Length: 262
Image: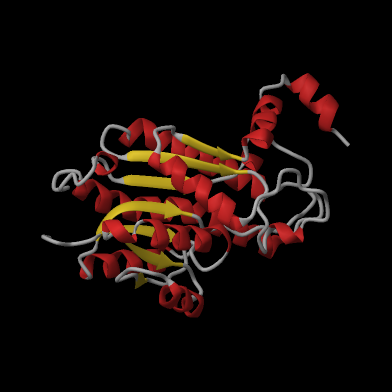
């Protein structure tokens, strides 16, 4: 559509890094005429965020990523509003520290449904939306030559850690999903993977251990936005921490287990 603003769709925008990312884009992309679609389950929080943001028009599309019917309804809402989606960022996630052998099964189901199934559900409905843009983009700048899909996982998905399940397993799954997306759609779409370290949010506040190199949500949002404007497939931060985790993840099993078995 002529004169249609380009939209970044942030899923998981009601709190934490997703909210900070929405605030970053509203502040920095307003001059370009870019707008946001804000999604999460908490519609009231999304509306409050929408009203606080500069620029616009920004849209609120509340839905539950763990329910496929709800995800489909969100897709239909996007299509009915004829929004030019050029970037989708999946930030939705839940977390609860648990120990194997003492799992709380209702929370396990929720974590897997939101973090992993939600990533699959959202990917399935946004792929046709983004692929439809590949033939009719106006190429306003080089960064928009291909529509972008970014999935947020975590460095917790690099390797199995003590007391990290099922969260770590879901994030490992998201990493694997993003890699597969890159192999299948990398020529048509700009596929990205986001792997944060520790960020001070309501989720990490549940931890009872020291979290090294912890960032604020605003610092994380800046790192993500700058990474998405770059060229690297994986965006990981803070690098003084994530490079150490990457090194650990490459250790042979015998050494890894010797270091981390309790």
